[in-house]
Image (cartoon, rainbow, N blue to C red; front, side, top):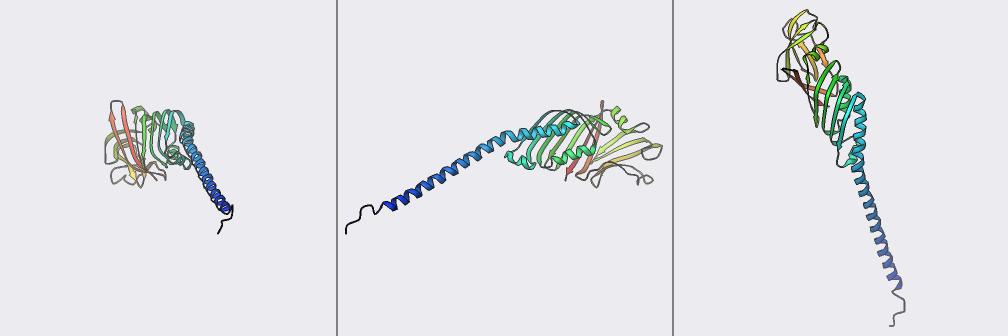
Length: 241
């Protein structure tokens, strides 16, 4: 039986169209993948810089910021407030305890934070060489305070003398009307239910409580202090939650 001329033409044409369609689909996928790759590279370069600028502006409300660096991979996570690490170096800062706690809460999505400042005034207390670290939800901070700075923060007629520090507690001899009595009493600064409080020792005065710091997002674990020739080295550990 004789095959008619042109019988295989439509079949071959259909197969060719399918091959062309698959080729176009592959090209489109390749182009989309290339565009996405370029966008990710650009985001990795640009987004950390934008985040660093925003942090510098935010912290800069309270003083002079010298340097901010942000690390995140992939950088797209910065759009949701997350980052691998943030480093801040500042000259001088002045802020209230509540403002400091608010800044820390804004950085809750950052795995590692290192903040250093040459001088910081927190409320009425002037500090130097302040360092704050965040690792996950764990916070630790230490700074120096001169004897004059401590006297200035306590106000006229009130004085303290460091007796010792251990197990997250600091013992002092408080002089003046700190607890409503005009005498020198032994007192303890420590954490109570996440608050930093100071209270006198002894059965007659044990009920007095003075809250030094309390924030619902910063759960104080303990405090420490030691004295040297230039004043005091103060420290605190806490959890951000």
